[in-house]
Image 1 (cartoon, rainbow, N blue to C red):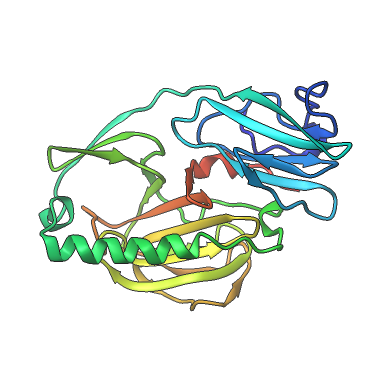
Image 2 (cartoon, rainbow, N blue to C red):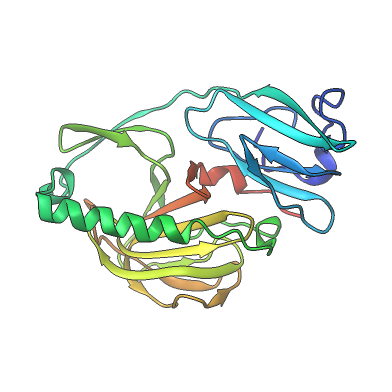
Amino acid sequence: MSAWLLLALLAPVASDALPGLQLPDTLHQGDLVRARSQTEISVDGRHLQRGPDGEVVFGLGRDQRQLEVCVNVARQAVCAQLPVAARDWDIEKVSGLPQQTVTPDPATAARIAAEAARVAKARERNDQRIDYVGHWQQPAQGRISGVYGSQRIRNDVPGSPHYGLDIAAPTGTPVQAAAAGVVSLAEEGMVLSGHTILIDHGHGVSSVYIHLSRIDVSAGQRVQAGEVIGAIGSTGRASGPHLHWGLNWFDVKLDPRSVLGNED
């Protein structure tokens, strides 16, 4: 079961060790996890903001096997190590990519690093908004051509895992915001991601939309779930028209499917 559960279904996991904290029954690699805490809380050393009703959110990495959670009890930190359920990952082969994006020369590599730094900075936001508690939807219609966590072999070169959901559809197919939020980055022509949009949903949660053929929003603009923000394309490191949809909690890359089908 996805960790993206209605708060009413949350169970007091490890309630003896961590009083006042409600978590899903099982924590899975790649999940965006919503919980509720009656007191101050930190996860793996990061202090979490709490929403008006004690809502907290955090992410579990692809290879994470355990999680340290600390809560404040009578002004003392009480901590526990919680297990994270492992998942099996696919192997995907992708061919026909521009070779310069697979084995870049030094100048291109430097440009890629600079672009990655701008994306990382956008993901550092920790706004008090709790847009992440609202409705989430798949941002485009089409064939699922790639899944989160799979080991990628690009042009016969083993590479990093795939950190998103790929949706293949014709160029120009509308792309919608997966949830409400504020556009924190809108940039054309990035080497790997092409035309790129990043939306901040509060408390460190962000979603990214890449390989677009066009961008219809600008940085700082507020968008609603389902609002058209651009269109599917094949810009950047892409072998054909598709949307790569990614989900993050700060710098932790998550499985976008963990938020689908559940909302407050």
